[in-house]
Amino acid sequence: MVDYSKFGPSTGRKGFPRHKEHNSKGTDKNPFAGRNDKSVLLERMKKAAAEKSEQKDD
Image 1: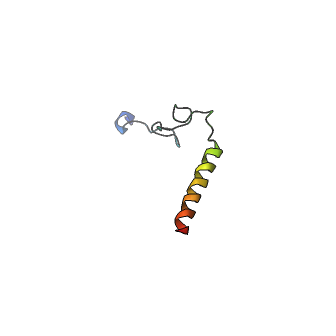
Image 2: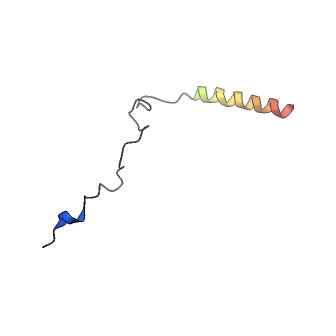
Image 3: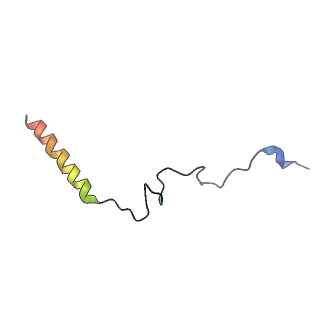
């Protein structure tokens, strides 16, 4: 007879994370309904491109 209590704790489910991530879906930092607004990203990219072209022209 084998005493399985000596083998230590059982392993978790395969592919299941060991802990929760700080920015996982559904948290305050990353809510389910929170969609990234691409217009903000586009404006930031245009500003960076303008600054880069100004530096290149100098």
